[in-house]
Length: 131
Image (tube, rainbow, N blue to C red; front, side, top):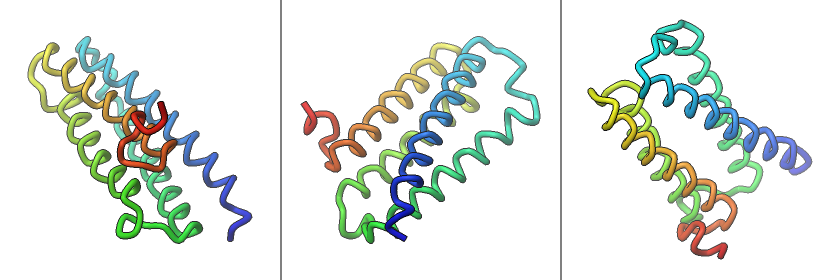
């Protein structure tokens, strides 16, 4: 199983980048009020990508035998993920005005950057630990 670590890690990182790219595009459309957000594939694709992303994360935890109960950085990523999803939902669906959509979009991006920092540093201090 250890020999699958690098391919799954690269898959996980690629899916994270694809997920972020899709979120940025959908965020722009949401702030600008574009109807493209109503297209069926635009609604379905993020769920497929994010399910694969989460599945790859679970596989990595299994391979490394690490989980939120024994690694604080994984717990930090999971907590931040909940905030990212919340901010993203507000940015794309719930916020009534463009200004509030933009605010929650920005908060979601900052949260995503924090998650990447935690992944790189393997520490909840994220980028503060790296620099």
